[in-house]
Image (tube, rainbow, N blue to C red; front, side, top):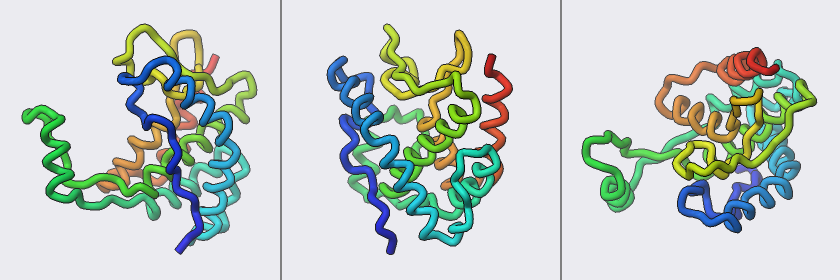
Length: 191
């Protein structure tokens, strides 16, 4: 078993719509204080895997190997009957829900992979930087998240982007080159 430290101290989860400004600021503080720690944890976890030869050097090509690692590492688990019923009670009947969720380790790894992916973008386009997205609309999908502003009107949310990729792994629709392809797609939009 690995000695990967799963994220257990994420303040307030990702439910930013129901948080006040102080709580949202706590997430930014957590992110800034833990960014290098989470990158080290990811490198440690990759070293302990069958993909230990991946060089996480922040090059775009490193995302290809990280995609292979992700495809083999992200796992799902079946929800208990009570967990499923709780979820069903929160979500309208007309919306289909799965009877599974990503494991805690998988969700933690997806945050770490998102931090890494974002840093690949920043290191290869040095005028970019992390910032916390705050808008008047709390229903905005990026609200409260750490994002990277690509151009005047466009932001990428690497952690959310990786969560979506993790769901694709769980559903069997993930392409191993997706992380690299997403990097190229976003890079082409940088002005």
